[in-house]
Length: 510
Ligand SMILES: *[C@@H]1O[C@H](CO)[C@@H](O)[C@H](O)[C@H]1NC(C)=O
Ligand SMILES: *[C@@H]1O[C@H](CO)[C@@H](O)[C@H](O)[C@H]1NC(C)=O
Image 1 (cartoon, helix red, strand yellow):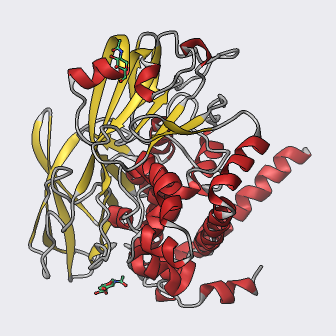
Image 2 (image 1 turned 180 degrees about the horizontal axis):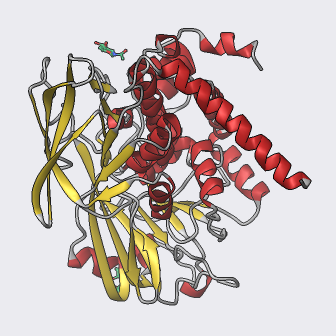
């Protein structure tokens, strides 16, 4: 016997011993694991949920993911000429550890980085233009805003430090039953206050000036969330973290992660729209008791059908215009739509030549190298931002064309752009592709309450987290939380749910 086959045998024995033991332990309760789980929605939340549910419940459970549209949801690309371009969720923060983990796990590389240059437009002219030199930017900001800029970075860093605690909690399998408890576990009462006041209030209380908020902070919240500094302080801080350096995206398009997670989780994609979810009771032959199931009804190309599930995870916003699912037989009842609405952001991709005079620039277009134009919150501001877009796969040796040449530009606005507006912004164009997104919640603190993660015994709602902040990583965190919650509640492990003071308790375990 050579060493290799010996070790294989040893492993087999070890495996048998392990499974043998598990069988013994679970013998009295034969239906220890759920048999079927439904996930409604195949965006980043739904596909990450499928991935984490597989991790929690093992290979035996059947996972069906319902999606009437494209896999990826609000991560989407459009083709212009020979290349694909990102039209939805665009950037990922370097400390977004779940997104990083997915990339490693799926073997997808990050997109090649192309240097960018930012400017701020007040509706008439560029009031700030980033230089290629760090020290010049620093001095310009210092001159205008004193140390506000540095203080802002420190403020955001303090919030980010607390935010990062969630990764340790999840590593140790802790889960939370509401968004408020999850936030509280990360940042205590401070985080709850933050979601319940505007970014403006939160920053003014920290001593930042109105001028700084208008000139620097508002352009950042506008480009990320299409809204002013009056969105909630938590999503505001997420937004400001999004102005950090080192942001990245996925080679070939961010939606590739969703496809990869779906495949990796060995879930089945059901290309259908879920129309209703109802509770059905079925007597169990083995135990003689009655067990309840969720009956999911759906409409696909081959007509309508329904199926029974042990666990259901809703991974699409339960809001007007986003989904329309009827919940029947629930007590207390589950609404099809929660209060609050989603904010419209129109993403217009234009392949054309920019009119640099529109931005009040007197530079020669061939020397105009600004790639990202942010805007202040001025009256009548038609656009939220304007950026030069690189393809989702950046070829080696790629260089972004100067403004004198045709290029792909992405304009974010709240309303669709009129022909007149396009004619103002561009000297000429050969294609325009418009996507109207209901992109993220319209954030208006103070909050009543965020929707719950738990809609019913084994029915979960992942997108509740978007009311704290909507981002790819937030959905991934929520997906893992919901998978853990579903697992612990199934196996009645209450000690892993809603534990207080985890931060101090886990410090000892490091
Ligand atoms: C937010 O504030 C409102 C009113 O000020 C209050 O009723 C509500 O409970 C608060 N919500 C949270 C999550 O603290
Ligand atoms: C470019 O923008 C300027 C300023 O908005 C405008 O006056 C001009 O008509 C535009 N040029 C073209 C060719 O559209």
